[in-house]
Length: 115
Length: 113
Picture 1: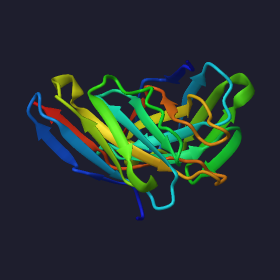
Picture 2: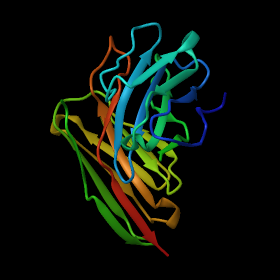
Picture 3: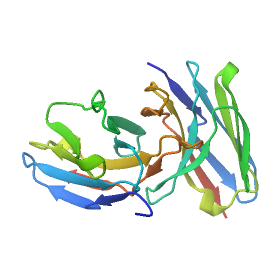
């Protein structure tokens, strides 16, 4: 697609429920990143996929968080047994390896509210 | 890990004024990016600038990698420039490709009409 697409744009869930957030990167971009941004804060790295390499999961805050990327394209971030501190905007970005400009392109984010 | 510090944290300008935002980083890098997050939350990549100077309209950026800082210049500011400006550097590189970025805490800019 023309940009990075994330869905849903907003999600309200009850504490303890599982949620799935979706990211559709720019076609042909081999690198995909998940970040989260709490209210008024900077961006916190969660996980990074590069091509067929094993993902870098070093930013995941707990084992309740997991992500997968199917077919080198769409990615799903799953949060199990959600807690109120998981409330944040979850941002996905993609970038293209091999170009002179390695700039990230971000999606519009999913605003997650755990009540 | 690498530290990224931005200053000032907040900046209020009158429309038409110029400003300089600073980003300091604690280790050598070969990649630095500036982003603008508008009031609706959308993050836009402004510059990929590992070194030297780039200009895009009223915005320009300079990175002095040897001294571990980058500057973002905004000239003749407009209300649409309001938002948060982030700089970001790689945490580490993977075989030459781009790894994940570490973001500063941002500079919140408000441009008043």
